[in-house]
Amino acid sequence: MWDFETEPEYQAKLDWVEEFMREKVEPLDFLDASPYDKSDERMMRVLRPLQQEVRDQGLWACHLGPELGGQGYGQVKLALLNEILGRSRFAPSVFGCQAPDSGNAEIIAHFGTEEQKARYLEPLLDGEISSAYSMTEPHAGADPTLFTTRAERDGDHWVINGEKWFTSNAKYASFFIVMAVTNPDAGPYDRMSQIIVPRETPGIEVVRNVGVGSESSREGGHGYIRYTDVRVPADHVLGGEGKAFAIAQTRLGGGRIHHAMRTIAQARRAFDMMCERALSRQVRGSRRDTDRTPLSTLQMTQEKIADSWLQIEQFRLLVLRTAWLIDKHGDYLKVRKDIAAVKVAMPAVLHDVAQRALHLHGALGASNEMPFAAMMIGAEVLGIADGPTEVHKITLAKQVLRQYAPHEGLFPSGHLPSRREQAQARLAELLEHEAAQV
Image (cartoon, rainbow, N blue to C red; front, side):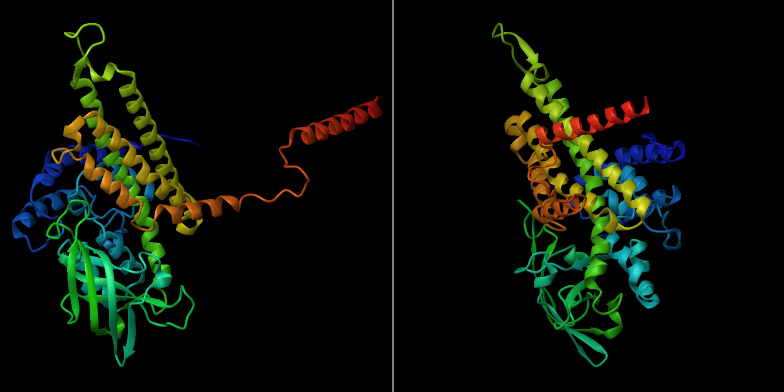
């Protein structure tokens, strides 16, 4: 049975989220503060009551199961929720689903020991601390087969040496999950382990914080980190030695679809501003210099609006279908093709809609008094983060081609003369059969 409606009980929850976001959460985006800085007591006094309202509604950390304080929602419900939350940079922290904490919490919940959960997961879920995922490296990007950061066993400890690049949220993190080579002689996907490293461990150096686009290093939250003889207890390995790649894939599968859900909100935000501008902005009419007409009456403006609406709605359906498939199969690997397709489409949709909105706002649209330039940079980040677009296109093509087989004939199977001969031969066979029955 096909159904494009949300059940009334959950729709009521979404309606509450819509109003709560508009009235209490979105205004926070205009404050000079970070949702990740748990040492900012002023902001924490603002956030904690809002987080409690979310808990009272049963909407805290909905991606986690009830045993961890969440609702265990499937991806379809999370999609409908996140396409509202994506409008605000503070919303994920208010709802307990902020990246990278949400992904880190998920893998500690699935792969962590009871001691790791008590020390790191519980305060993370309570919103008391922030965390960081330290994976990519300057020379290798996101290709784990090229990583050189090493963790060597020394008695009851691991000793970590190496450099990590774009460790998001590094300046606020209370702990890092570091991907390091622990067995260089193993296969490319079995060489690495993930190790939990407390922030206070000696030898951790944040070389600098990197901003995105026009962000300064003060504003930027992507740390360039150097690990020098960092010693952590042996029991801080997450999920067992050599399991880093499998854990990372589990984490990234959900992360990619959640990014897509929030991207819908950003694209809609740009689209709403585009439509408002089209109806509000007056331009000179075609008959007399004194005539004025809304920008929306011009066909090229209408084309931009039509193209944008189509892109957003098509992308939303792709995201929802992929979310439904994840819920159906319960296995990210079985939906690998669809997740790759979402990842490929995501940056293009946000870029195209934001660019059209920017253009219709003229010089104002290109200025830092409107959000479009930041959206376009954000779209490019989406094309790089969690694996570049090109890699996902390769994955998508390979997965699609597995559904086909080569044709061994001289001509392709769709060759019209050959098909015609086959049809005529089949028809002759049928006629002979009919004649034999008379």
